Length: 339
Image (tube, rainbow, N blue to C red; front, side, top):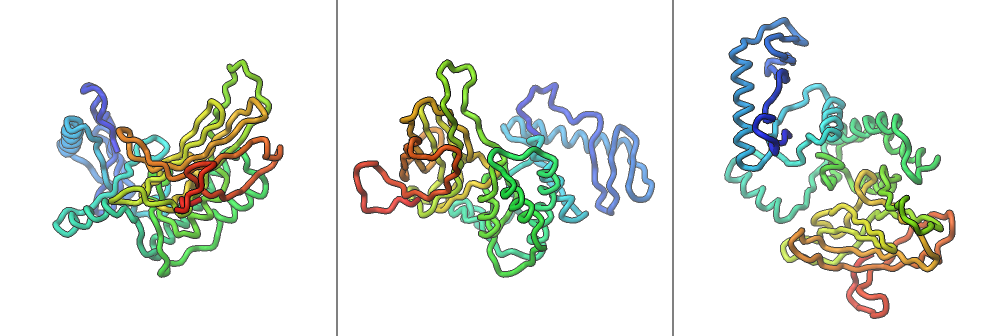
């Protein structure tokens, strides 16, 4: 995905770009020189200029519409090549989370129904199972070279290694679901078992809310991870709940990613789900509320909330708890709000 929200003089391709020969030879073109992986070939300068002019025209048209330019290509060298492209484009913020659909009457109708339901589910095939396993192994190679996350001990590292180096997957009649949000897991599909295993792994990043310039003295810290909601009420008429969790402790607040159209949303380890709160006094409270996100121009609907007294938590301990959501701390409601 190429952004077009730049000045006109900056809206150009540059001196070099890559092309692909459908006959099977991959070529890297820089100016008028050509390097091929197959037989030696020559590219006409006029063809190169025409291709560059066409791409520049597409970028100018996209800029007038206020949209980026999206380029689609196929990976023909196996699942590991596809996984490498996914990881590389995601790191430089050039990966598009849009799904390409063929044009036609039936596909247009199907896309309309898909936008309404948003139940991204399909039957797992052998190819999708092999791709899932290839991406796991790629992530294992990348995670082994990076520093461990906060709260990841020896036991967590062993679970991560066991999950990423599991047995080869086989295609069966099991359903797989599109992983959300797309920026953290671009074009990834997982089964319910894989989603749960990924959710239980340590978070890759904790958002630190501590302020070193604050005059108040800290007496401790509280690390919180929002993993999953179960049985949320349906708060939208045309779709399911767009779940988002807000956490407040003292003067600090944190919000997770929005998981759209799910009554049982999961926040996986690469999503925005974990934070570190500073504790300044012994009677601090942690407020955790689940809302249905209605966008920036509307007020969110409350699904329920829980309140935790920090003084009741033991120092240096980790709690894995499931708490029922309530509309009020003191008033009982018969209708279930989930957990």
